[in-house]
Amino acid sequence: MAKNSLSGNIPSTIREMKGLEVLDLSYNNLSGVIPPELLHLEVLQFLDLSFNNLEADTCSKTLSKVRFEGNPKLLSLSKSCKKVGGSSSKCCSYSNTSFVLLPFKALNVKRTGSRDSFLAECKALSNVRHRNIVKLVTTCSSWDSENQEFWALVYEFLPNGSLADWLQAGKDGEKRDRLTLLQRLNIAIDIASALDYLHHGCQVPVVHCDLKPSNILLDQDMTAKVGDFGLARLLIEQMAGDHKAPISSCNFIKGSIGYIPPEYGVGSKPSIAGDTYSFGVMLLQLFTGKSPIDEGLMESEQSLMGWVRSAYPGEVMEVVDPDVVSPVKPEMEEQCLVKILGVGLWCSAGSPDGRISMRDALWNLQAARRDLVASYLRRLKQ
Image (tube, rainbow, N blue to C red):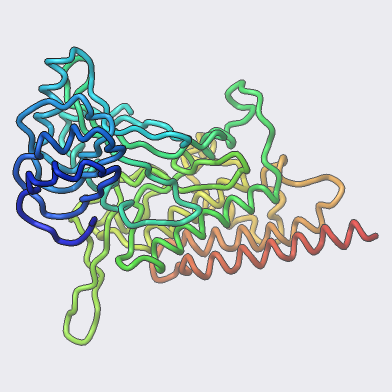
């Protein structure tokens, strides 16, 4: 019964459904007090009341099997449970599911904009489904052990950490294998696939706005998934005469130094071209090992893109991370790297009009991978 535009109160007669095991009333317009009898049905296994406008005047001992996030008035329920029971209430209970709880990390909920960031991530991920996007299991809004408001996102657990961790392998003292050329190319294609879906595969295009290595997570098979949509923006097409103009869902932009497209600095609103720029910078970083805020580059007053462009295409091996190339077949890999770095330079062009789309970037990277794998197979046959 989810997403059916239901309104009004939940009828108290629902207590007569004594055999009810599962009930999903999420994403409706229900209001009023939750019938206490509903929460105490003996065989009820799971009840989803999330994203309505419900309230409750009593504390329920069965709260762990109820999902109620997205109901602002139910924060009072969590608070009353905390005072009565002496311990923080649970938002949900899952079995046989691997997930990690990411509380808002490092984020002060009293800080200006934190609520907007939390809601932006929930909104951006509510209808997003893609193998290369981190799966949001659920959200929590409750009170912690110190009776402070607590917001959290529960994501699937990705055991291989972030791409930033792998790019720092050996530099921070941690023992970790270096990524091979093919692994890096696979990761780049995974990220490009996610962005192509966000930009062109969603009903309403989604702009991530904060694409960087620390927001790319890797699962047990080293499949890359894009996460952290706290700054994400939805783009709405507004009819202007005979033309469609992209309008952002907000009038301000934030991001991370080194990955923010230059047009954002002069007042341009978030766009899919902005994400493409961030992807291009990250792609160059992935294959050169140089951060866009590398101290050496900054001391020489040179950008990562300018440094790569100065060696492209004839001397690309001078800027490629030495750990990427195998000493036994550098000539085969050099051709692939020229194509990859070319994509990075196209994507990170200074003007939005000079950038290729993420769909074109994806096709070019996939073509580079096909050529690389074919060259490996030919060498094996020899």
